[in-house]
Structure formats: structure tokens, C-alpha cells
Image (cartoon, rainbow, N blue to C red; front, side, top):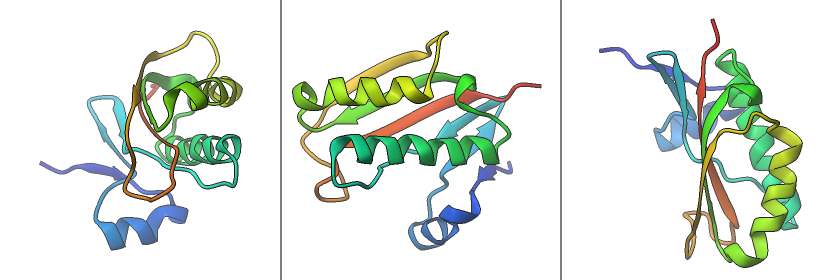
Length: 124
């Protein structure tokens, strides 16, 4: 079986260094790996993560409107949830996808506040 790997050029170095795909396409769906943004504030970090998701989706021929499911993991969920909701709503519009939010103790990148994983459909 051949996996249809989605790797935007801006993410090629990470793909080669860490051996994981930003996304794979299978059976009409795009499965994105978790994405961590960068920024001085929670808002900047979350906005960067959603921007990166947009790059991945575009490489696969999709966009934010094609997202059918989101999983958002955050440290300090009580403090960060409102900021994430505000930022998410600038990228993801109605009809909204299924969504799961999870509070966690940390991420592989120290200091990261959130990791976002999405599944999107490929529209014919």
C-alpha cells in the first residue's frame, strides 16, 4: 500500500528530520498531524498553528471549510480556551466541524500552549 503523503515545501525539512508527515490522504479524507504554532502570546501561537494547518490543507487541495473534525489539546485549558475559540473562529466558519478539546500537561516542544489536529474531506 502506498501512502499519499502531504508535505508543503515549507515543512519539508521537518518531514525529513523527524520522519512524520504533516498529513496523509486516504479514502477521500486528509488526516493532519498535530500542529504547534509559535508566538509570544497565546493568540499569536494559536493563529500560527491555524495558519500552518491552512498550508497543509492547501497542499492537499482543501481549505478550512473542508474540516470535518478537530482535536485541540491545550495546557491550562481554563486560561487558553477562550483565546483558542476566538482565533479558531477566524479560520473555521459554520457549519462547524466536530470538535474535541483536551487539557494536557505539556507538549514535545517546551513552552507550547496547544497542539491542533484536524481531519478534512477532499472535495471532488
